Image 1 (spheres, rainbow, N blue to C red):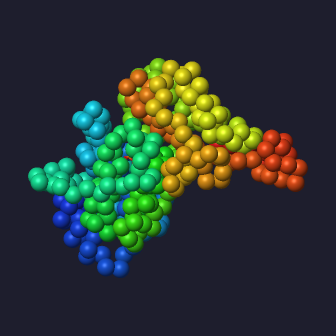
Image 2 (cartoon, helix red, strand yellow; image 1 turned 90 degrees about the vertical axis):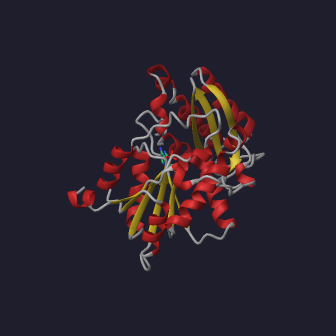
Image 3 (tube, rainbow, N blue to C red; image 1 turned 90 degrees about the horizontal axis):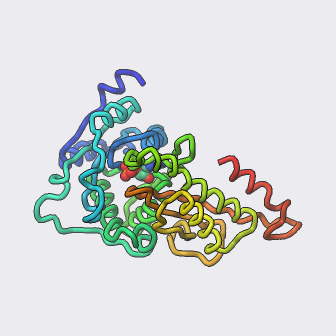
Length: 311
Ligand code: AMP
């Protein structure tokens, strides 16, 4: 990127200043990429996707205390604002919005967005209050930045479903853009939390992706029972010495368990490698039902299997 890109990025710390700045951009299309910082290539991809879609690109960096449980890693969560600022400037971002927790939640703060439906199971069940915190901060950020477009990653597939639900339910006129998960060479989904892994855990962690892929292949070859698919993932994780939090086949929008694999099913998993909890997911494609038959048909399966092998 050019040095002009890096010098022209504005850094805004105060919510009111952000709201005034955004409010003054009458005709501009505003894009927002919300993050918690400690930026990596996954976040960079969200920025790259958003850049051509808007006139003014705002990236928020805010470690939102409301989405961490009392026993979670809020204090230890990596904070690398200066490195984040440099990366965002290189990516041609217009505004870095990095408010403090005190400014976002001043004393007496009392208002929350409580989401039912897609926020119930999976991470919602194992991290009570997490999506309430996510929904609350997303709504606040949207009110401060007033974006036309907001970009999220498919890595956090339940978060994506929850945000879509909230924005629809509360009539936010915002377009949600979803970006496929960016991965390390060995398939591990990029995450700020990967830095917590010690070398042994790091080499075990790709088992999460591998076991999801194995289950997706089984689905493409005709295994339609969610329980059997989940079992493939559980076994893969246990073999890697990971502690399974959940493995479930759910509808990609409702985030509710499905009784049979269909084109809308996603296999989602969370597991602990040591103390570090990692999540990942994969869309399941049932076998094509061609002329020669349905499940288990070799001819019908081939395209789906090939697609999955290429992942
Ligand atoms: P976070 O900073 O972890 O809250 O993530 C901010 C945004 O980046 C969310 O929309 C995430 O889904 C997205 N994100 C995080 N990691 C990845 C990744 N590996 N690939 C794609 N998007 C990601």
